[in-house]
Image (cartoon, rainbow over all chains, first blue to last red; front, side):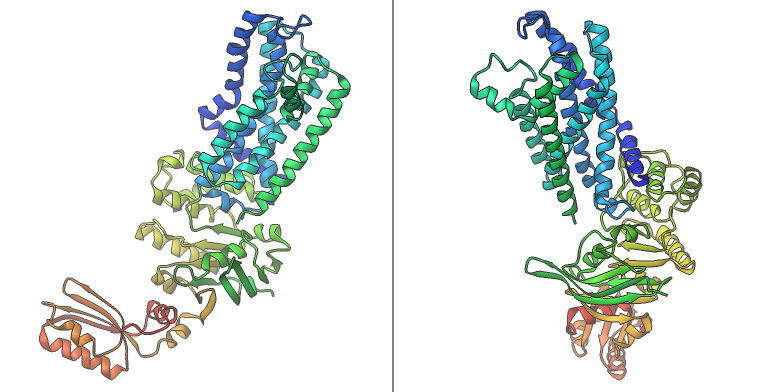
Length: 251
Length: 310
């Protein structure tokens, strides 16, 4: 545990030195909520979602999902930072296992995502008068943590499999575009074409957003949420195992 | 008492290439051990195996009795490794680099801060303590990296080309520190391309070439391998004409001309060397003449080049 603590401390120290990191981790998703969300809400109100749910309310879980996805992408980039600084391989000779190195990074990522969750939910409740399901906050934290970990491991696989920053950035941009738009993040799935809905149903972003929406504003089918949360957990564990394998191969 | 390092017939292959090819050696505790060899000889690969960065294809290696493959974490708790490439946290300050490193080795904050102050004074970067390492020069970055090794007291210290980017004065000081650490019982394993460094520091040297042992022993034992090697340095008032044809009469390991000074390593019997020196002195006035026995560089060249250059 001490080694993991040291790893978390190091990550926090590095992120705290740079305002750019803090902007991307914390403020960027809020920008979506405060600009995009407000804009769409003003244009469409509850017409897009129906059932009397306005877009700001619908979009809260989306902002959290985007934050989870974005934070994971930003912190997994730290593998490149370590590699560019030359310290990546030296750290693998430090008194910590390779799994601890990975877990330290993911633990820090989870802490950032928890801070982001608190800020986002508090702001949404204060600014848009959204009726947040405060009783489900522990579950919301859990969904955010499992979600962020899952995305972090997925990105880590790419970060550890390629040595080129530009390839990693291209892959993450494509993933960002495809996964976020082919999901229920920006719009409900019901009015969409069948093929689109089928694609969105196998997209882990959709699973996470369903869980987050159920935990924040109470929309959704509880049984489906249970299934999707299990599916996401499997996705996260598989991601961890494969990312750990990629890390073991580094020499 | 177990050795600090025990290597038994290790092989490391990358596809068809054998970077390390059946290397075996042991290193006693508290010694400064030099691993020398030309580029691509397998030094860094051997170090990577010993520091648990890389697994051997076959064979075994242990550090303080802990197998590097079966007990890597136990090995890592007992070593510090300064790798060949500059490795620092560029976004952190010099002080934070040292403190963060100490945290991984479970040193309490107070002790770490005290040590960091001492180490920074020793490495002469107290004035830069709070500056981000990314704002410092390449030499400084390397210095921070090496300084980290002195933050902790692990029994074994690995240094891969430690003096890269250091000015001569600092290099001397670091070498003195390393000798002091060895006296205190720390085992130091270093690779270097600068043979004078190894000559000055190492009590035990292993020369490897193409992944295999070329020679092993202390400095005097190695020098015996280069019998009949003499280093001659002559400074003339003017460089003699036809000097190259004079030199061609005796086999040489290396020759260097600089201004009016000739530096040459002969591989020949003493009498023959003196004959050449006399012949050269006949043509011009000799301002300075120095004749020495073989240096580590001569031994190194002879062993790793396979044949005498002439």
